[in-house]
Image 1 (cartoon, rainbow, N blue to C red):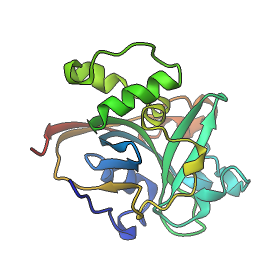
Image 2 (tube, rainbow, N blue to C red; image 1 turned 180 degrees about the vertical axis):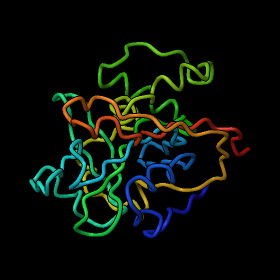
Image 3 (cartoon, rainbow, N blue to C red; image 1 turned 135 degrees about the vertical axis):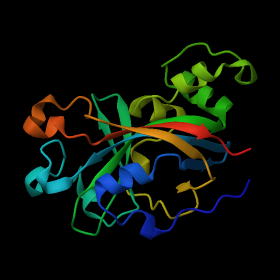
Length: 210
């Protein structure tokens, strides 16, 4: 299937709006080995300078977080615990460092490649054959930000990638959402009162495109 990347205007909104807007959209990575894709089911918004949980809180600007200061529609990829990578989308306008963490996707294309990527990185030794995996087993490959990046093979080389380009991008294939939960974010106990902001978005999909 030929996909059309969403335009820049999709991303040039505030981080909370983008985090909810991404739900149900298809994350696509085109590689020489094939296409990997998944429907976005969980996101977190990080609201830049005013958000104590953000890498850019207080206007902090470093080599690590420089990508956050670009306009909406670029990939911000960083490593945590020296092991896992996390994929974020920049939001808003240039100079306003808001971003959205992509926490989980529902695998669609390239499930075999995802299994292989997870094996290569030593996360899981054995998977069932892709065509015999249950939906629960498929979801378990990409139900966390580190697991997602491992399954897709996304590392720091993708930091700064233009999401309106032709390799790593988001598209709309008409998935329908039945409900959205507004939850607190995970792993930010250091963020004071901002840890209680309902800036995590979890979607339940009602209908998948045929």
